[in-house]
Image (tube, rainbow, N blue to C red; front, side, top):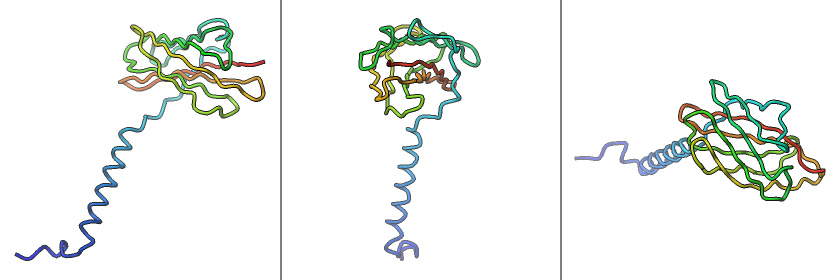
Length: 158
C-alpha cells in the first residue's frame, strides 16, 4: 500500500512534531505561571509597623495582620516577619517588600506555616543610597477560592 500523499513530503513530519512540542511547552509554562493578584487592600493609614502589628480587612470577610520585629524596623538586620490570617483557605502566604519610589530588587519571601492561621519568615531589607526609604510590604494569600493581597506601608532609614 503506498504511503499517504502528505507523508511523502520529507519536512512535514518534523514540522508537525515541532509544532506539537512548542504547544506542549507553552501549555506547561502557562500552567506554572502564578495567577495575577487581585487589587490589594490597604492597611489603615494610621497604623505604624515600627510600633505594633497592623491589620487589614479583606474583601468578603476575614483579615490579615502583619508584624515585623525587631522594632523599629532596621535595614541590613535580620527581620522576623509574622502574619496572622483570620479566614480559612490560605494554602500559602508570601510577603513582597518593594520600594515605594525606587526598585530595590526582588525581596519576596514565602512564610512557613506555624499553626492555624499563623505564618513566620525572616528577611533583610537592603540599604537605600538615599538613607531614607518608603516601603510597601504586600502580604499575598494564595487561596483555593482566589488569591488576596493587602499592602502595608512604612519607612526605614534616617
